[in-house]
Amino acid sequence: MKLQISKICKNVALASCLVAGLAMTSVASEIEKIHFLIPGGAGGGWDGTARGVGEALKKSGLVDETSFENMSGGGGGKAIAYLIETADKQQDTLMVNSTPIVIRSLQGVFPQSFRDLSLISAVVADYGALVVRADSKYKTWADVKAAFDKNPRKVKIAGGSSRGSMDHLVAAQIFKAAGGNPTNVRYVPYDAGGKALAGLLTGEVDVLSTGLGEVLEKHKKGEVRIIGITSDESIDGIPSFKSMGVDAYFANWRGFFGAPNLPQEKIDAFAKVLGDMYKTKEWETVRARNGWANLYKPTTQFKTFLENQEKTISSLMKEMGFL
Image (cartoon, rainbow, N blue to C red; front, top):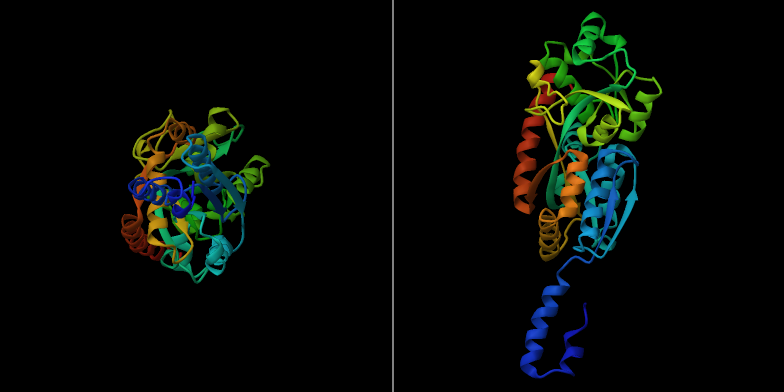
């Protein structure tokens, strides 16, 4: 695909050579392979998003080769630092991330922010969910809220990230919207969503705060029960908190970043292949399976979106005492 134009010119006339040269330039700018860097462990939202996007890109033929690397640590900071420090070797790498890159940067969990990376595009939005075991004594949101009102310390709520992070923030937002004190939420942090889910299933905690996409299939199979989601409307029979009288809305974006100082043409090519992905049936299969909403905001739109979210979250975190 990337034959040098000079070699082509040995076999074609000059006019044809010019056309071939333009064609080769176009092809060379396309994305042939993507290495997905995942800042958390297996089973979490970042992992599912990267592997789902990779699956759709490869099965649709938009990308020839995909690979995946999980790199947990530092609330996502380890992978960000690695991407920056090895930037010259990461020209084909896309790092998945989401709202926590904004939250943890504000908290000083790591010194970098989204401004230190090449912004490719937001891709999906995932609603927050509160989840219990299938055999939990808590059958509904009303049961959880009643127990919280009686003694909030007895309701242990897990999340796949550190205290003051998104899973914590979403749970606190829900209880605050229901008239509770958000600082009373007893949050138990785990390193990655898969571990938090395991903590729920083994009975270490009572409730899991996570993304809808991480637990939707397990809910449908009866392995867990989702008692409420932070969307405007109910989805697949799962009640939204708004439908239960709790004005709690939250949509977590997930998207992709490249190494710093990527050439603009590479940034645009990455953004384009992600945009083309939305037109494929392979992507629709992945999206529907995970309960995601499409959220395509490439390059400069992504930057504006992140700057606005940073302002909103900073204000919310200060109000709730997390910042």
